[in-house]
Image (cartoon, rainbow, N blue to C red; front, side, top):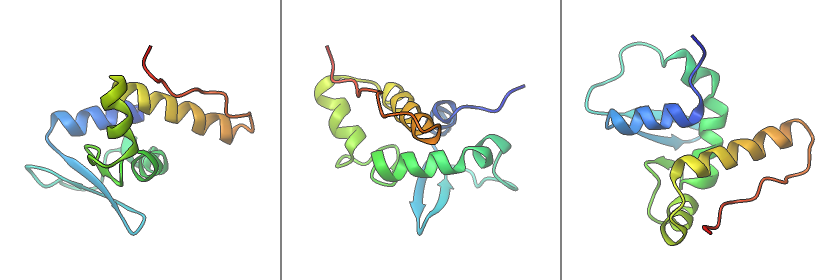
Length: 109
């Protein structure tokens, strides 16, 4: 069984009615029931990507804040959050591998 992707983790948070927030660089997850024990391995493995995405795209919170980049860009262009997450992660991977940033943001066609 492979680790969940960042998109899958965010979808699970949404389905479970959990919220995520970055406070002082730390990822905080809250929901209808407290999380017992440590965060799942998938979240631990992708913590840096989750924090970067939340800070840069979502106003530091999940679901995205109404004044965040994801919210603003998804509304008028009808792009899905999942598409935005995939594009962000593609840019992160390209930067990490030293490739130029060629991933274009979806602007709704």
